[in-house]
Length: 75
Image (cartoon, rainbow, N blue to C red):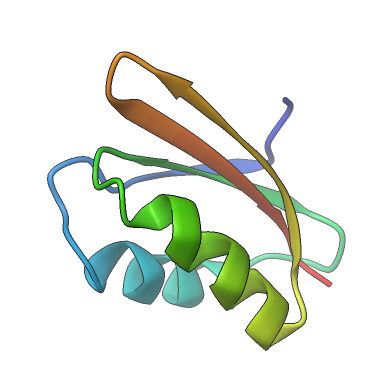
């Protein structure tokens, strides 16, 4: 998936990936996509819930060898 920006959260654990994502999303323009890379499995449930709560669009997730890539579009 094509992202406008990437946020590396590898090594960070709940709630830091969500905190960092919220900070980065403030700088994005409407319609831009943020790719979040993490290794905390909690992001699988946390990120879709956060996107829904904040009105952003959760686009999907890819997992490969313990690395999780999550895509969120700013609304």
